[in-house]
Image (cartoon, rainbow, N blue to C red; front, side, top):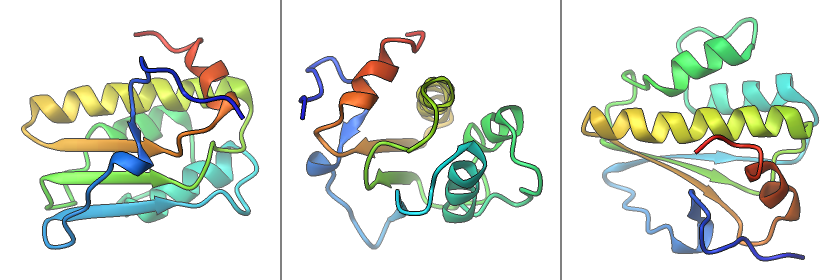
Length: 131
C-alpha cells in the first residue's frame, strides 16, 4: 500500500486524540458501504442529519457545512478506510469535506475528517480535489 503524502489535507486516524467528554465522534464504517447512497446514509446516520430521505450531494453539502444540531465544539469523522464509492463520488465527497472543515472553523468549531494512513485510492482521488 502507498502512504498518504505529507501534503494530505485531512487528519490521519493515528494522529487523532479523542476527548470523550467534549468531542462528538462519528465512526464511518466501510463494510456494507458500496455506493454514494449507502455512503451518504452512513455519514448522515452517524452525524444525525435532521432530515435525510433522498441522499444527494447538494443536500449532503448543506448538512456537512452546518452541523448546528451537534452541540459539541469538535466533531470527528473517523473513517475505517477509503470509502468504497466511485472515484468521481469520492472526489466530490473530499471536496465537500474540505469545504466543511473550512466553513466550520469560521464558525468557531472544529471538524476533523480522519482516514487511515494507507490508501492509494484516496491519494488518487485527492488529485482531483480543488484546493
